[in-house]
Length: 253
Ligand code: 9D3
Image 1 (tube, rainbow, N blue to C red):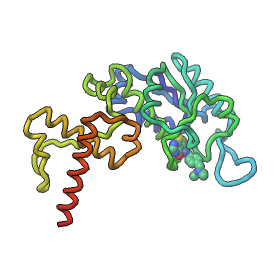
Image 2: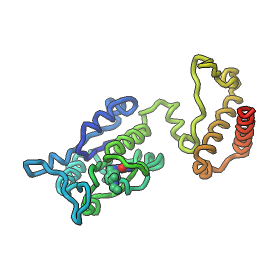
Image 3: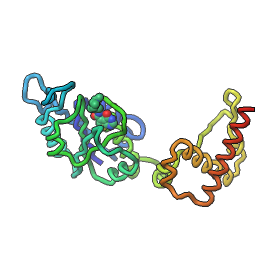
Image 4: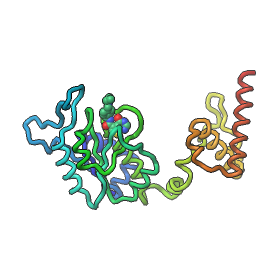
C-alpha cells in the first residue's frame, strides 16, 4: 500500500504515522507513507499557497497551481495507481466500510487542505473522491489523513497478528466491545465481574455478547438497527435491559 499525502505540514504526517501498529507496518515495508508539499511547487519568492477569496469574505483559499502540481507529482510518485482523495468537511463520512475499500487498493493520494479550503476548480479537475471525518470543525485535513492511514494500514495483510485480524473480519464494526478488565481483582472497592473469574467459557461468551449488545443499544441504537439480531442476541439484550433496570432501582433505594 502506497499512500502519498499532499500537505502543507508533512511533519504532521511523518510524526503521526510513525508509532505503534502503523509505524511498525511502515518499517516492515508493508506500507509506504510519503508527503508532498505544495509549497515546494510555488514559483514566487514568498512561496504563496493561498490567496483572498473572490467575492470577499473572511479567510483564505488555497491556490490551484501549487496544489495541482503537487498532486501531479504525488500521482507520479505512486508506485502503482490509485484515486486522488480530497479531505474536506463536504466529503462523505469516513467509516470502516470505506477503510476496507481503500485497503484493497495498491495506493492513493490524500489531499489535505488548510484555511477555508480549496479553489473549486482544483476539486473539479483532480478529485476522484471527497472524504470527511465527521461533522466537527478541524483546522485542516492532516488529522483526517492520519486517521484514514491508521484505519487502512491496520487492515493490510500481515500487519496484525492472526487473533486481531480475525476480529477485523467479524463483528468488530457492528457492535461495541464488551467491557475489559485486568489485574488487580479490586480497584477502589470495585470488583471484576464474577463470571470472568470462574472460567466457564460459554458463560463468559454469553456475558460478553450481552454487554456488547446492551452498550450498543444504549449508546448507538442506529448501529443495532442495521443488524438483524439472532434469537440468542434478542434474549441477551432483553436480559441486559432487565438487569440495568434493577440496578437503577437499587441505586434509588
Ligand atoms: C470554520 C470554517 N468553516 C466556515 C464555515 C469552514 C471550514 C473550512 C475548512 C471548516 C473546516 C475547514 C478545515 N477542515 C478540513 O480541512 C477537514 C475536515 C474537518 O474540518 N472536519 C471533518 N473532516 C474534515 S476533512 C478535512
